[in-house]
Every structure is written in C-alpha cells, then in structure tokens.
Image (cartoon, rainbow, N blue to C red):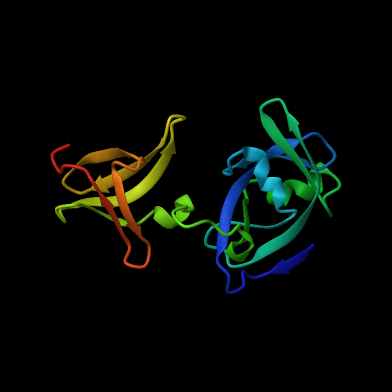
Length: 176
C-alpha cells in the first residue's frame, strides 16, 4: 500500500469503512453507491479522513455480502490489528474514474449547492441534499426564511439544471 496525496482530480467519496469483521482483517463498509455493490466496480480505492490531505491507496482483494453488510478484504491488511487504522476512513476514487453520464443525467454530488429558483426567478433556497424514495428522487431545498422544501425530481417540476451557472430552475410556487 502506498501513501499518496489526492491528485488534481477531486476525490469522490463512495462509502465509509465501518467496523471490523472477524480476525482476518475483514472490514464492514457502508456504500453510498446504488446499488451498494457498485462500489466494487472500483478495485482500487483511496482511503482517508476529511481534513487530512494524506490518503492511502488500497486494493480490494475480495468482497462479499454478509447478511445486510458488505465485507471487504484489502491487500496488505491480513489481520484485525493491521486493519485497525482504516476503521472510520472514507472510501474515495478520483472523479476522473466515474462513468461519463448522458445529457440530462447528473451525479447527486454535482447538484448539491445549486441555487434553486422558480420560473418567476424567485429564489427558493439552496439544494442541500437528495433523497431516494423509490417512486422518484426528491431534492431537499433549504433557505434561511423557512423550513426545507422537498421537491420531487420529476420532469414537470425540474425545468432546467445549469451546472455552469450553479442554478436549478423549477416549476414550483414560492408559497408551497
């Protein structure tokens, strides 16, 4: 395992290393990908902690589903003692390794922070999160003057996403 600093390609956090699993260095992970097993499409990870510029590069040797948990074995971590330093670390990959999306598709991380305005150009707040509901995704919009708004991510509501300008235009009344 080599120590490395994140390069010019920003890191994208795909999950978190949770607790130990067994005595042979296995680790439970919480994946932020959908489906959760998609995290293993990236066999080389960078692991580290927020605010620490030094991230380690690790290679996935094996993984499996164990009940509700994903368990991973990483190269160079043969036992529980060796893998102790990784518990609580974030799992990331360089953004350049992510799949290129089609027009009209977005990674949620690119939507967070967009200013949200309606068609009348009234600012509704900032997109601060996304929720997966099953029926459709939901945008969480927060503003200082009221509780958060939950906007369904459906074509009749989402009018335009302009990542360059940092604006999400929606068909939504400000009184909702």
